[in-house]
Length: 492
Image (tube, rainbow, N blue to C red; front, side, top):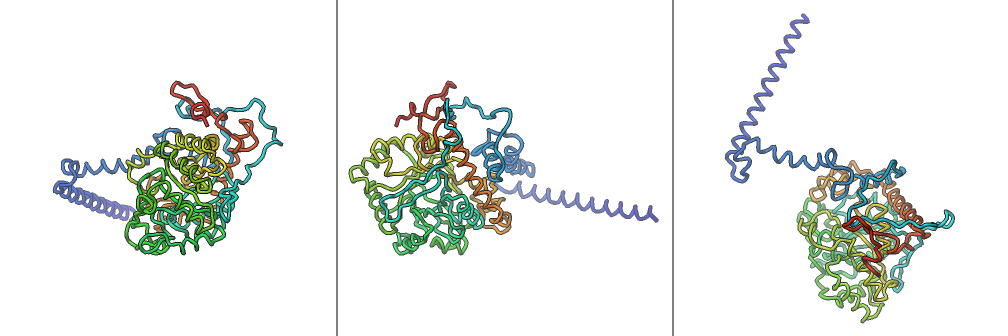
């Protein structure tokens, strides 16, 4: 009986195998015909079925490079060592390492901090004090932290991501920039300080024609948590190009918050229509500051040194009261959810060059105490933030660093609504993986970890707190392997 049962099982398996093989052959045959008859793809037409593997392997290439082939310091845009530092900081784990650095210190552009012969004693160590932005505004802002969250709009990132970031920023005592997508309830619910970003489409403060609606702007500024207004002129990943939000990401709620029709791509103008020159810009800044009573600044990218020189000269001619309260300077290496590759790759000066040049121009015109500089653009680890402070920044912001703290794996799917970690998607299937109640502690821990280690670097170079670091405190590796003081490369 056992033998008869075994034979029945084997016969059943044999039949199933024959059916399976038959189905495979049938599918291959159908694909063969489809590939041979189609005319759009030469590879599939000339190599039916087999040619399809080319696209499969291309799609899998990113995965294999990330997990198997790329060394810790090789991957772009952020390598594994950078991401691991954020991960450990977000988890509240120590970031000490053993044996020696895996970083190639001979790479041109590498910053080397100049340790002091006699650094301050432990009891001479101080935390960074708050710094006032917009002393002439009706409601100046005493910004408590050197490190803050850069602009990421609700729409570009998901509801649970915004919720986790809002709560995490509140816990860490840092500000949260809304990005250009308007002020949502989820930005406010955590209780953190808010910087409202006004993009060229004026989402959240626009009328039906896309013009600035002063009534809506006053409503935004009336929230006690909203501390500053940032007028976005450009961002590093796409200078000269407005924001892009694919239709797949525009839900009914997002459309209402932004003032957009649902189901259509959200394409922002490439610049503010009412601003044609520097004088127009200063008038617009003054108008927004008057309407809101809040410190008002701009976000932009360096294209040429001459343009910034003209800008600061115009301010000097009109008087320091006409100046923006802050300038958020993004670098050409800045990130985004969606942008044309030529703009991502080829337009906009790197923050590594732009920041020391722009801060020197500001200082030369006697505007250092009037205009605060906020540095942004691929600054995610303590060395990045310490370098920026040495180069002249008063504050540093990061977006992608905080994305990593939420669990971003750099899947590079931000523009496709298929983000596997739920950060940049509005698909409930993926969003359920991001639990704000669990993630906000990671956000706060990352911010606190950055600040603590920047303070450690400051102590090492011989000053009591980070904002006392200067260009003499960092050297930059040159092409011949030697290093030169940043103050020599960029005086000022």
